[in-house]
Length: 623
Image (tube, rainbow, N blue to C red; front, side, top):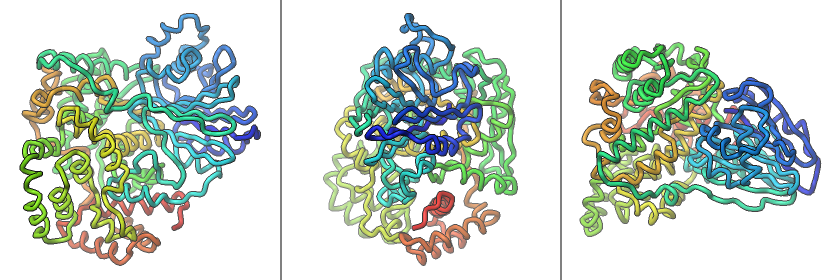
């Protein structure tokens, strides 16, 4: 896990060491073990290294292949590098790193080498002979990659602020992308928070020469590549899921440093820890956060799992006082503003402080194994599809009589007035932080609608392909294209890498995802929470873990924001109220309603503005 940066100047203009050094130094937190540069004619590469595999300096980057033709910078891990290495027997390897395997594979197969890779990665390769730069991102978008280009050249990096450090573009907020952020707490690709700065789409590569951007190609697409034919026998399906889960965990244990794990005490993290033990990890290091507030505390369940699998367990008490000490650090660590990332930062910092460099996480299990209430809600809507379409007049009348302007009632009206109960209409509503009505009220974006968001547009464009999957998988695919890809994975990466911790997510193994998406609904539908996953792993998980109330990895935000965090939030909200695109009076009134315990105002609807303001101030964005 590392940070990468690069510049390719057009028209053969010589690259600048100062530029690439500024870009690379801006993300030093991503790789404290080494920082190196290459400047050669029009190309410049920068790399920050967090040493995981082959800790020797021989594996430092930028890395050049044996022929001298290709030089590469690489962020991430290729878990199956030893398998790929066997296919490259004639290559004169001089290190034991996955980096050298990757560049040797690129030298042999070009960009098509990604077909052989199982891992999380973003990398760039400079071909000296053809004077062509190729940048590549992994299938699921676990590792970030941003780029910007104009008539002077092409710039890329692992973080937005690294690209900004080049000085080649102004830090202006992308107003089109901002509406997506206010709706779904994320900036949907290919847009980013910064105007004219793009995200390279997951599962794609892009090629550039010294004159222009040449082409971009999607090599993996969840709604195309992810469709599989499988044996519909329940016993065979559960056996295969167990095999794929264990294989996924085993792959993510590949490291030359100790590997730990996040352990909330829920089904997903407990499954990962149990499979680590089954894969032969003796007394793995596990970590969880505990609270004094019983409604949020899950430590008793984490302790139960830790005892069962004989882990070296650390429980971290988080109180408002020490949380406040960390809050600004967490917000400052955000390359992209997020209303949902502080949790990950706090536990990641504790894990790194304990001397762990790599940690496995259970994120992604709910999205894959129908763990959210919306899965059942969506399938119920599908069963009533004919009535839904025939009852359009009644639905629209019901929406008219649904009085009130709360966010909840606004979302209900959207469901009632949608033309069909299809995933592109239902899923975006389920994930809304602010409804379109509330976005319009609190901002100056009076023409905004859900149909203008990148999430809706992508789901709508892929709706026919999504329709070929089982109904529950419609939700999983939508979640991948929405919250999972644009919020969950980004938060996990930026907040763990802020403290130089590599996080690996077994539930985001592409072979596992492709298989589970093709499982019929009658087998996947939960009899109890994530029953297919639990029964596939039997007897791994204790009943007390499986059949307990779900709490989720949440902090008691609503309580803290009205007490210990009140001043912190109010200062930023009032400064946000002065922004040109904000309706300041309405925002302040909404805050007052929250403080008066108005049940129609959720803490997340306030917090998203606090985070945005802090991020804009930190990055010098004045609008």
